Amino acid sequence: MVKTAYDLGTAYDIGRKELVFCDVKDSVRKVAREFRERSIGSMIVVSKNKHVGIVTDEILFRAIECGVDLLSAKVGDLKLDPIHTIPKDASLTEVEKLFEETGASRLGVVDERGRIVALVKRRNLELLDRFSFVDRALRRAPGD
Image (cartoon, rainbow, N blue to C red; front, side, top):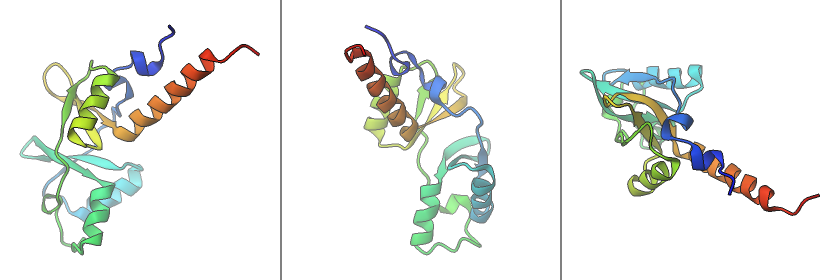
């Protein structure tokens, strides 16, 4: 049986390596501006050099919907998503399982020393899974 990228890939392979960080004391307005300028949808939030959560575009939308004063609010005032982590050499099946167990939209990929080296988005894994499904179906299709 021919293996697909989904079968062979690791958490690190599909993770975004360009990580963006913000501090709990940063203004929500500043973070929103960086989202727009960098065309990103999440940042890892730190406090005293420790990772404390992830702020996403969806969290910002919820804050707006709940009436949070975005001009004065700090990132630490928001309900952040927790950071669930997975080893960089974990299979995509393991990544999928952790997404299901945690309900997270993103996972931190950690190296042997426990440092976050990439961020995997659930949506990217779902797209890869769909692509691999189509690829397997095409390989099984009768010849032209």
